[in-house]
Image 1: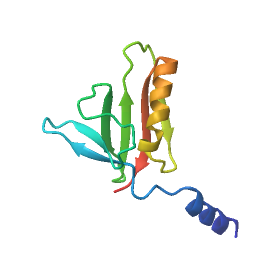
Image 2: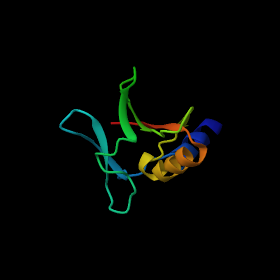
Image 3: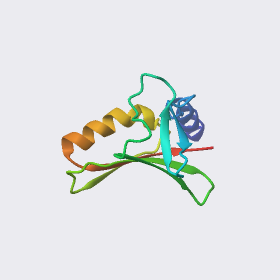
Image 4: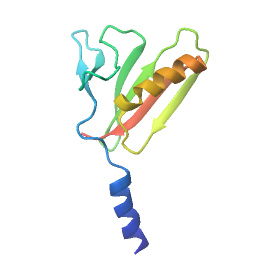
Length: 114
């Protein structure tokens, strides 16, 4: 019975937001960029060079979306991995604050399923 309860709890506790607060678009130069799904999101415009968007394929056929925020004063990179289907668009403000206040580059990633 314990297994059934944990599966039920996981369905309520770990669910991706629907719809996501961002969309991934490919620019004319082939580089990926992120576009806000809502006008209030603080995701930068496509020409911002401090954000790289990466889409990585896994062996199991899933996709992992990653934001790489660059800080010109950084000597270190922090890897922020969130595995319970959080929304990178909602975490973007936190990423910017960590990047600035800790003076680090930040790679934030979340499992994303197509």
